[in-house]
Image 1: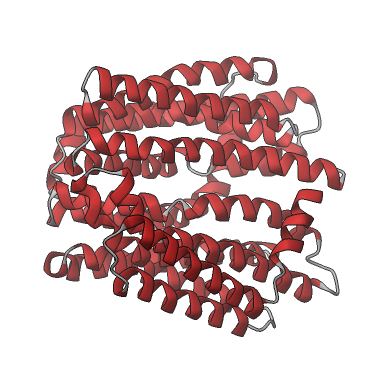
Image 2: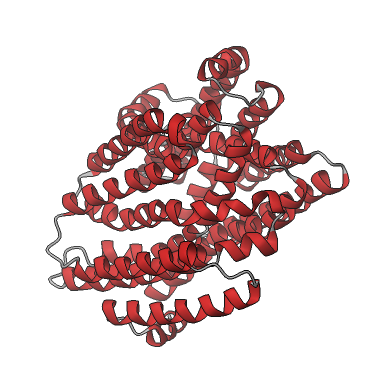
Length: 473
């Protein structure tokens, strides 16, 4: 693939992921006018559960597909590979759905969940099942280098879900159920859309010897994948168990704002990732990596600064009064998002070294820390525990990833840049208290610009040149 085509495809893929997230962000201030914190907590819990079920139900089969697609010698082999893997995933998840429908209520009651199994968890189970139909087709469009249809479908799916959610919540007053039904309906429709899209690329079949090879390949990856998602969702599950649904809603919306940083990190990472693999064996790799790392840190810290510093004003202007206190937790949670984003970069280096099991080990360590500390401290100290533990676990994972990456590069510039950002955020969020919202925004904007200049100097980044270079590419 040529460099220009690589950049073009990378940009299209990034848009396909970023635009739906932006649509969700636009919906946030609207929904908070119609949902209570308890409603929002239920929605976030169910969406988080969907993510976890996806990791369990898909068994990392898409990774096997991406690796072995190119090893198929004929077009028919490729079609049979997609058909066999799709048949296997569908059958496995039909089994998971049946088990959860019959036994799930007992399991969630044992967890101490306050969210009714019927209809909320049932909707999550069905939504996850139909969402599975999009994963392998998405992988197919990646390997055949046709990102545009996939991006169009993702954006269209996000727009339809947005409109349907507003109709069900605002017009028909379905509150939390409106959001969940909208996601279920959209995933149901698009399951058939994706099946239609791949009809010429698939031969449906069951090949048991190949499935055995799939399981040998993917099962070692599953514990790490589950552990990673457990690290990110255990706080929500344990808040539901030990605290109230209102607490879950407040924490969830604070986490939603912090996770907007993923829009920055994912877009930047998609641009950087190919160059890491491309230059891995180059004599200049360390200097290339350090430049990429510093640029990535710069982009992340801009996001961290803006989301943290202006979180209070955002909640005051854009949400109902019942959500205003959520700003307090945003800076604490966003530390973990920063750490997990930077871990992706070092995780890519670990993958380039061929040490793929290390990433699973790192995730298992993070999950163990997150679950253990939340169980011990959450009942006593409340939401503060969830925010701090989440970031602590992700930061430990980052340190382990840096150590295993074994790169002889300096970490002083990123460290002092983060320290400057952290001190500035603490002062502007927790120490500066200006009642006039517009005056507060104006003064904080000046402060953010000054800090950004300081970070630019520490990281030796020229933001003007950086933007011009990106636009040129």
